Length: 63
Ligand SMILES: [Zn+2]
Image (cartoon, rainbow, N blue to C red):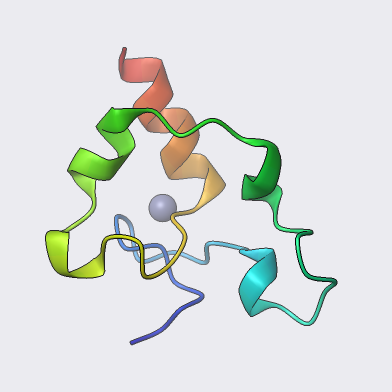
């Protein structure tokens, strides 16, 4: 399982937790993830790795 790949679009998720950066420096740390996001992630991949920022923005715009 690729932890640096978005489970929704299979693009790079840019998660700081999977990159050689300081812990807690992921772009997602200060983002709000609505329930709709978790409904789009396949159940077997839920909570295993980050989605990407573009999917988060896309899902938020659908509301
Ligand atoms: Zn994505």
